[in-house]
Length: 141
Image (tube, rainbow, N blue to C red; front, side, top):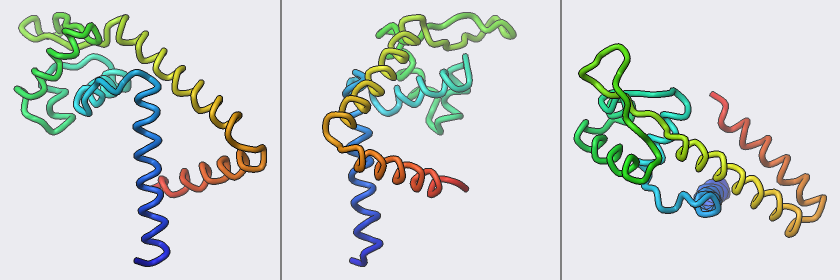
């Protein structure tokens, strides 16, 4: 394995661990990847039909219906009649869902801030800030 392969593997591993930790801090560990994708889609794009969500996520409508039903049962989303098509329903984030998202984001931010302050020196925090800037460059098209 080359040095670049080792760096890439370490970065992939640590970013996965950080992602899992942040999800746990936000209380999202109980949501499946499919549920998180629906929540994220609704947050970024607004209300959508189950069919539109299925197309956006590349899954069968039946699978998306099951995902939406589980989120609805948890109070995260709700269905309302489509204003353009009375036969269809749109899926919205509920007030409880939006509140959970805000609280989750705040919990993630608090954990990151506290951990940076408690575990890293000012010099190490600057190194992390530099690394974040470099990762941002890696993510540019």
